[in-house]
Figure 1 (cartoon, one colour):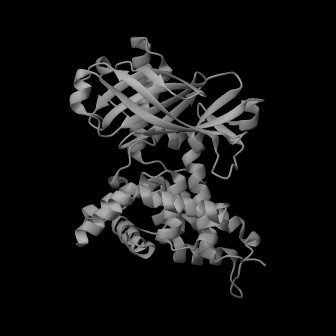
Figure 2 (figure 1 turned 30 degrees about the horizontal axis):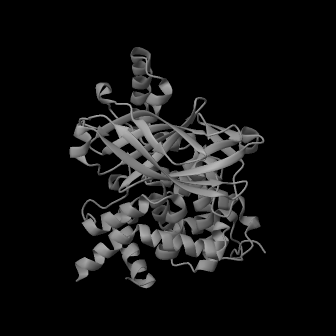
Length: 174
Length: 244
């Protein structure tokens, strides 16, 4: 089964449609993963280009968005392994994210987001997929080629590592 | 303790709040369409700041190493942090205790700046039957034991199995006690790991003190693991300002 296309819709049209639908979502995830907006834009472009080249191989076993996120995560992993990213990857900074200067984020939100960005990739991935995107564990296991037990374990450890920022929010609510 | 649903809400709200600028940003649609049609080459965009910083660091690195006699490898490990260091404030940490049976550690440099205390260690395997990789990213491994096929050395990718030969692969993960982070640099001279303690005891550092961190190792071929601790002795240090 190939990509579902509307009648008379070319692959290029389908690509445009995918970009319109999912660009912002992918950009958000990649910004957090790579801690840098410029790098995230590169990876998002690469994700859509890979999807475009492999449209015929999309089997429809998952949603289009799930498929794109899986490609994006693999692209992020490759990017982080690149010699260039290793060279420039030092401090995590909120200034590298696309914040809105007219409505800056709250301190609590900055603290939690930075804590997520400081996680090792294996924990950051499950945080983004489970807590941010809301995928069930079995879907995450399939996306990351892990067992469900491994995913559950990573989720548990990620929660422990984020405990300070999460409980800090809870205290504020009280 | 918050439920997963509550955590989801917290994380979604936080990330959305910190990435609101995306909603107003121009779309990448045009560039993507052009690249898909082959009308525009696929070239990685690098922000101007990064280019300038990289160029400056590269020039500084060569000049400094040439004039100070410090091995370029050790100095490059500081460059990863993008530091503007006061060379006179660099001290040599001494490994006082290492409970690992698989790793030999040599302290090369320590530097105390506004962002914390950073120590650079050369990491070698304790014998000729093993090779060491830093965490999963260096050795391209994950918890299930699936590994990639390549390893990065001096910025070049080399086949992992060819690199390790008949030796067993040890994956080492470093954890500063308390807040901190760590990174690494692998060159022909070996594996160098930078461990940074974000909130060191300032009073103790000024007098000279010990710092400790933990390592979790895994032998990928046998599945054995070890948890060990390392203690470094540091002479009296002075915090450097104007970092980066």
